[in-house]
Amino acid sequence: MTDADRPGVGQGLWQLPLAQFRNAVAERALPGCGAVAAVTADLAVALIVKALRVSARQRDDDRCSALLDEARALLGRPGAFADDDVAVFSDFLKGDERRAPKLSRQACAVPLATAHACIEALGIAERAVPLVEPALRCDVEAAVLLLVACVDAVLLNVDADLQGLDDAQARERVRVRAERLAMALERHRQHSV
Image 1 (cartoon, rainbow, N blue to C red):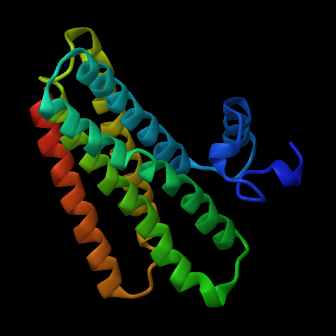
Image 2: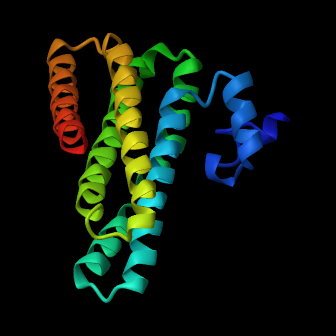
């Protein structure tokens, strides 16, 4: 992989072939767990969209069609955070001390936004299960498992990056947001069991 093909330099992660993305994860500092979680979350949303799309076509159900529209509107949002994650950590690795406080805030904000999008997708998935064709429920259930894992992963990121915040109030605000997302995740876990 040349420098021009390296994720975060000249092209976004979504323009990379899957094998190149995988190799970049394995062999380079970036992309890391935040970007991998964001890509995985977006693929989970795609599974929900697929299940709703096929089911809406087979059934004449306005609820299914409306939920499909909602899922389609979310598709792409979690994945966009993958490039944001790479950009923030790429800048962070440059070691510019003057930008460190701003980058620390962004290093927490990106995974929090990813977690929020995952929680939104979990809500859609919960409502989709009874609406989709039985043969497609496994896609929605698999999406739920992936989204739960993605939230757990990005909240680990937040926890690791929290100490980089030099402002105690900012640290507390981020901690509270992360805690709320963890509580929302727990509610979804209980509903899916």
